[in-house]
Length: 474
Image (cartoon, rainbow, N blue to C red; front, side, top):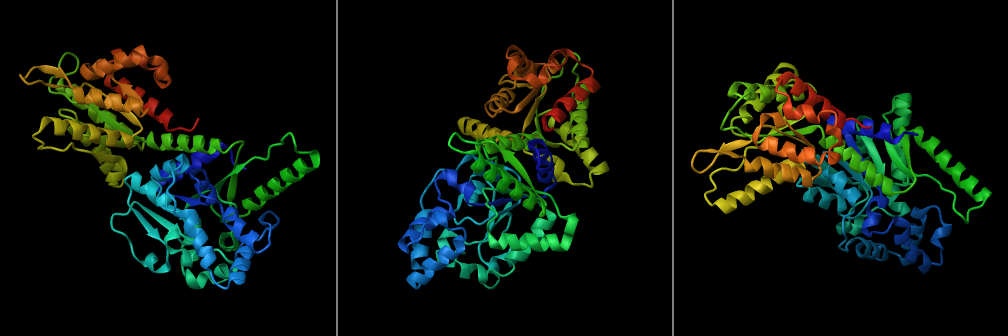
């Protein structure tokens, strides 16, 4: 058994390292209104005189239906009817497809994963038949392997016992690709029953090949809970069966994460997403004017050291090229990347220059607001420093763009760190945060110093402490 904390620590690390994968079963789609395999077969089983609740081998039931009718027409029609309807995507699918996971496997026929990826602005490369395995979609952000087929190709869907027997002929190489992923990636199995013959065979082969060196994977399982109508014998049986299932999954390196209610899974996934996002940090600020303690040299030094130390701690820094600050942020990040990060630029620095040359003021304002929203959707922490600009007559004014980024960060519940001592927009944001300090418990220890401290090294050290705490699973 793995604790929630252990799962989060290991799976978040796998996501950050690019080694995470998802294996989705029917249980992932059920909250959206799609039925599970057993319910798909229930009316078909009744038509041939069987009670689906008394049957364990569902592939055989599907085969009996096929045998009785003489063809697959009834099964194909049931798949089309069950999985072609429009449904609302559930939150677990939404979170899993927003996360920067590259590999998705599923036995589901529906399109929830593909649609979730599209809505997250991620380009999916969907593999339904073996011929697609040899091609690579340009600019893909994720690969979706539909190992049992797709509702749009119902006649080829894997469902009956014959389909499983002929799987390697009809779906050549799929098992091999999955086997490779199970060896090299950390999987989260969600909504899956582990009664699928294909997966059972693949896991057995990996166990045989790697013995004790098999990779750890994770599986959510609802803990057996005694109900008012459950007697001692029934509860003991259900508990013993669950314990045996847990031990059996361990043979394949699959660690069970128990939950008392399925709603806990959503909370766990949210926590994982927040921790992953906390590794991406947006530095907001601009400076046309430099006053008092914050001369241009010192503002440059603060921006440089912040970005440099964040990259050193393996964070990913996002910059919108804020006037008077952006170049120092970029230089600080680049110096660390090129000195000790193997020149892995994209892993540690994201450059998001704002669209230029938009003459219409309203159009520019609208596009920039949307752009800011996109930036803050991809980052978990927003740091605010300085924030001033020239107004229409050349005088100093608060940078309304920084204030807008603060409002968006609040709406998205991002971690907000205002370096109020640098003045201007940062001071305005700091004052609002301090007034509502109960909403920012992570700043409690640092709030006073963020408003008064001018020692650059102390400021940088405090910011690093705050952000490191946010990406650590509590």
